[in-house]
Image (tube, rainbow, N blue to C red; front, side, top):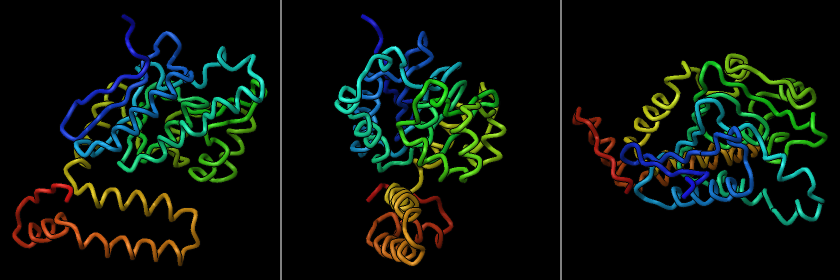
Length: 258
């Protein structure tokens, strides 16, 4: 039997890794990969035992873009029926913190997939780009919207209109990644971050993610009100009582997600 093109791994308590597994195709995102990514991330979002999700690829490619062979002869109706936006939305809707561990190429849909994460750990030889213009199309997984929000209009426009790739160091300087580490340490670092976050109160982590993502598209007064309501709600949690009691008692807290 052939190995699945997307793997679900459980390397540590409360941490799940969703790994793209098409090394012969540089982890190109065909419809099967997109469907399984959506299914696994949705399942992790619904699983109370999972507190953090890591998106990973291989050593040479996180994901080198869409599978062009699967798209080249498609017509507009076929592209509409594929409803790829729905599959992307399954990832963006994940309520848990998501960390992208990027080694090698993160191009086109691969760059867009990484931008669905909340934290991006990049290897020092990683390459990011939205080269869709070079094959006569535009990004279709959020590249024209997420990239300007991440790096600003002028950096985004240069990447989108030229199709040029940027190094991990350039991506770090423009704010596209959270940190850059040696290639061999990418997944170790992502797992360490995931384990650190998984030990913190998951309700608070979820509220932080909700406030950041919803608030960035709101006017500031509305976003501040959203934040105020979220912190008020946090005082209904057992973890708030435990966290503050542990602080006052000078002991390590035990967060349970209640």
